Image (cartoon, rainbow, N blue to C red; front, side):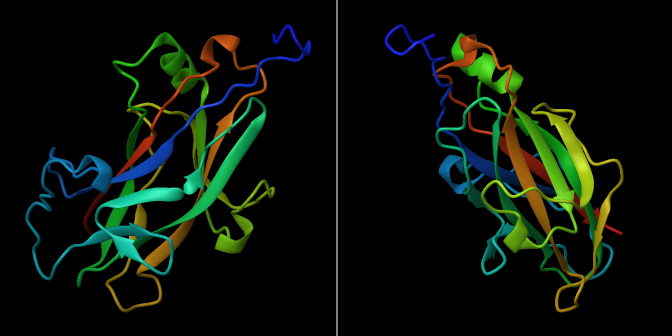
Length: 202
């Protein structure tokens, strides 16, 4: 509570959501450019090539910083959302899915960990990118809704056809929320959500 105004102290954090793409069955990861580490190992491809990319619909990369999900000044009871396009740039069809979310707060402060524990992520398919902006209410196919943790996953894998075909990419709508009842213990906390996706040949 802010004693000067009698209003609850706003909960704010600075976070840049980053997307981690892991291809095949490798345990190695490639994190977003601002934390470039490791290598992509796509495993054994029977024929053709595999390439899973993320982007904003006009540009895509293996290492993609999801800056469109701007979570500056996210307050309790609010959310931010942005479209994310997942695409197959390879020559063979693939399936992909969500393979966990990390927050970068494992060694952070108690405020950071409280904030990370309170946040939730919802990911939808079949939402037009133009509808996944601001605070618009959306309707689509819910693929995941829950906490930001390593067990976050889609109920079933998503299919992408080979590059150059109409179904080689799909737009997802990613929403980051902070519940209205978030504890004041999270005020001033910071986190950097990282969404991991894994893809493999069909």
